[in-house]
View 1 (cartoon, rainbow, N blue to C red):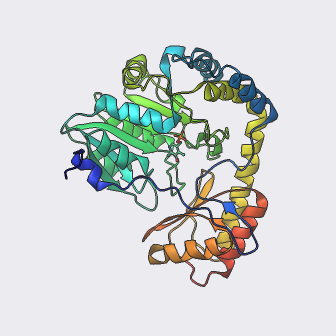
View 2: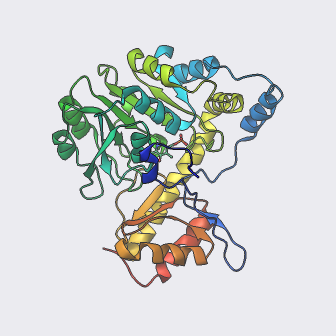
View 3: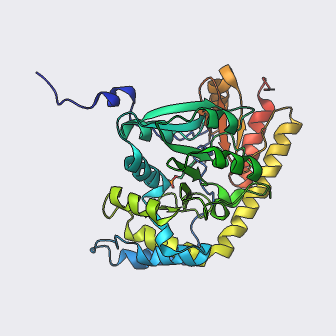
Length: 357
Ligand SMILES: *Cc1c(COP(=O)(O)O)cnc(C)c1O
């Protein structure tokens, strides 16, 4: 009996497997594997969601008018420079759909965000990966890897999973070397956690660069990972292109309402971000004091290059009810959680026999 025939590219992937939740023998369970906010939604945001739920019999606003106006007002950009999507991963997919055709290349550092290779292949384009240098983007090597087939370049700043960020001068020098017909996507999923003043805000860079798109999300600092909403800021030519590749109604009405409410409550949310940043510094310093090498991080996670010991380390964390994100053979990414979660993680790191670096 034969079975339906699928695109051969599907044979190269297994379906995404979310990490299993670790539970310790005494019942503790700390999820430090997905870079989520450890805080539950603010009461005002929960209310906005509950209120929107009463109209869930209706389709969402496909133009996300209120949300786009709120983003436009908050970030001081024209509304026609903004497009929203089902998470910034959704926006990434729309961008790849907009540029990909047979022979097109998509360039990015590696290791970086796991969605890039999968979505590139699914869009029918070819990935070109440029190794990180000292856990950070090697922008010179990336510029040299550009060909006439390069259609899109991702710069993940700060980089997931290493946490490192590129600074203004080197980023601008890189952008100057990219051909004008090649789109650069600056993925700023962790923008709100950046404290290094030399790391540029993408929104200050895209004004005179029609080939630069800035990606942001409500999933991390704004704490709405479960609702799926992200956005792009770019010149109208880019924003229009992705409106064409958008799956209709893919940003649901609860997500739109919650995102608008989150922008209204931004001061409160950014206070939480500040406490996460303080925890990040505490965790990184404590790990260094224990003898670990921790690359400077501008995100809400730390990176430990454990090489062959990565899975063993992840198992040691799991035995204590802590899930981290291992990349076998490379290292482990550990999200910054609530203080007690971070303490539990630091205790495991302290007891672990093999230090890195
Ligand atoms: C978490 C993350 C995102 C956010 O994805 P959403 O789809 O908005 O939840 C985007 N880019 C990077 C690099 C991330 O780590």
